[in-house]
Image (cartoon, rainbow, N blue to C red; front, side, top):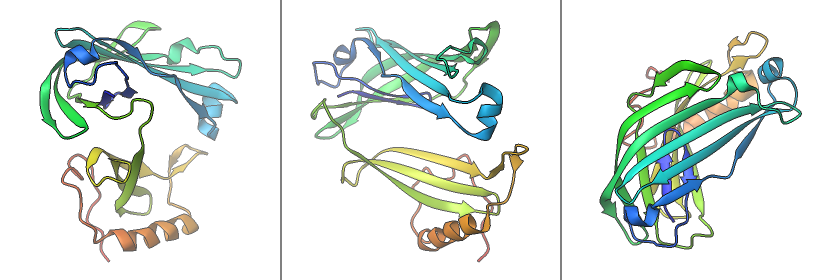
Length: 233
């Protein structure tokens, strides 16, 4: 079951062939719409009550290995009507090559991003380059009807307003890491909105978890782009 992992999207594909090749990926694939309710006070002040964000991902792969990845994000109001000014489209032209590494069930293919940009259909002149975009393509040979994953989260640091965390994704109970994700979260006072200190009960829970995480080994990718100053005990 080929899986496309990108900074833009996660798309699961199920071609009939299981070989780790562009031939097995050839075709056009579309993800199921991913719907996210926009229910925060800030979202409701902008979009109104019961609005939602809808994301779809399309991948087209040619036999030559040339491919196009497109992520479309829309905002729908409470009546299901698209708010045109909020629609964005992220597009990347790719070249998919041979497998770089593989094991019993997974092969990681070489991917080169040749061009990537974000545009807003409501404003044809508003094109923004997505410099530095990375896309990973992996194929899996196990049951295409299901995939079991586990995500482990580690706190890397925190202060009065921010929480630095690192996720690792695994296939079921396997130790091998198949994807990572690093985030810097901030506490927000929605009356502003603006950054604000964590509430005392929340900060206490964060600190309790931090005490069990602070001496854990860090993944080699952690802290490459973001991080907090070293916390003094």
